[in-house]
Image (cartoon, rainbow, N blue to C red; front, side, top):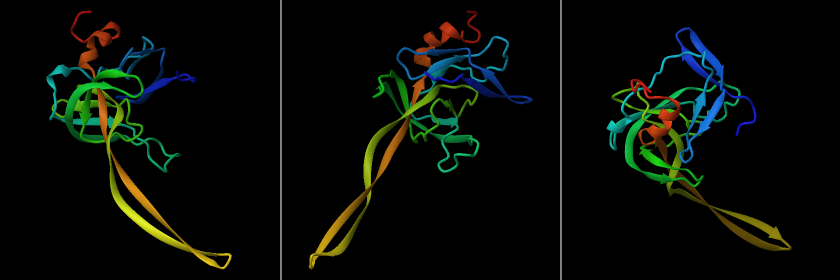
Length: 195
């Protein structure tokens, strides 16, 4: 639902190229979309492979451009995060999405959404796309008390304030591509299928 025209940037052998997006195809239930480029835009398909071969426990990597807090004027910094698939399950998001998901052993910083997730055994294959964080717990990690005295109308009053700080534990969630392969094949036939 972006109001401004969209474009996508991708790396080529000669540098970085940009292309307008001519169509956005949104999945009806999963938090993922396909961006269609003009037909004259040609670049290598970097990701191919059987996503169904991978399961919980395997080491994976995510790549993206998470927010740099306090660096609003700087260009985005690409970052590579590594961890494991902790579990695989059917996820119903508070945003109304429903999809087969993988939970990663690390949280997704803001801005990592949409980044590809690959098994460490095959970086050329995207098995999923980062979608959101799953908040699993809040852990109390510090308590501080402070007392303030004030004299009002010849009466001394003491006010004690207690501040509690919490650490929020998040795990990144990934839309798994294999369960939505039929939807993908409608718009982008899988290499070698002859469709």
